[in-house]
Length: 418
Image (cartoon, one colour):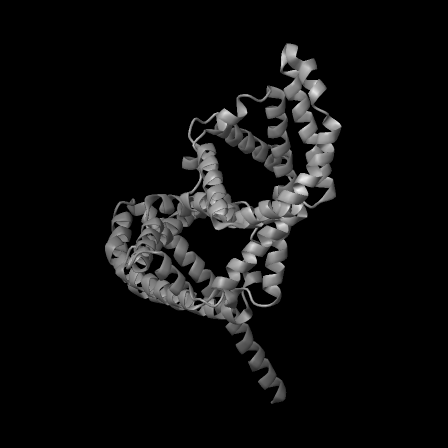
């Protein structure tokens, strides 16, 4: 592009850019575009809602996705940031739990408390029956004899000055020998007593009241008597175990298993069914209408217009003014060039036929020439005419001389022949 046309060419490009931008956004703001967009969204939305997740993730795609998710989850769970986050959460929750003044019964779900108490009551007959069987276990009987001896020794030691007197009347070895015989005599009776419904009911009520009294206490009441080092060690143990489990392969596999179970539960249900069952009635149509409105508002917003204008300006500057385009003829075929030339000639001919007569009438060339001649001096006009006549007479004389010479030659030839 020649330098003298650069300014005009840039103005032309800017005008075309503005006209193109205006035409584009006039169309985007028209009812025709809105109707077409709403129809397109309606069709595509119906197609999407009629499909189910299995149609998107069938066969290898599902396995590939699940494998990818498992790897990503494993990477996230095993990262240092996740470990620190888990440690922080565990510390915060344990600190909140151990310093809480709220009773355990209020912290635990009511169903869990009732289930725990019910499980204890159901296990009481088994425990009592097992305890009755221990009376015949040699190891348990030996342990029971040892505990009885220790209890008697503590009792005697607590008598003070009467300690020596009482120890002279009590022979611990003989008592230890009598206890197995006593257990043999009372074992059947104790076992039968432990199996009685009234005994089991009393034990159950006792344990239930004991558990309920424990549940009425806050966690802090259990922790306060303990040394700080033990509490800190227990917290550290819980924190380390939680981090170790989360970062173990079992955690990522468990998460993948949950994802697969969740996917299996919904894979054959259409998206429309899932949305209608999980959202309030009429919410899906309202969401689709809201999506269409927001999309139209975004496409026709001043921000979108500015963004498109900015992109067009950058690309036009790059493609038209900074990137060599080469010769236009090299980018056009011979047929196109021929049709372009023919069209251009036709347009110029029509333009000349239309504009030249008006231009001649407007300029009034005859009058301009006449006025110009009238302003000239007479001698100047005569000299001009003589110069013109001399030029023409010169050619006439030359033509006459040539014609005379030709006639003379013809006469000589004729005479010579005669």
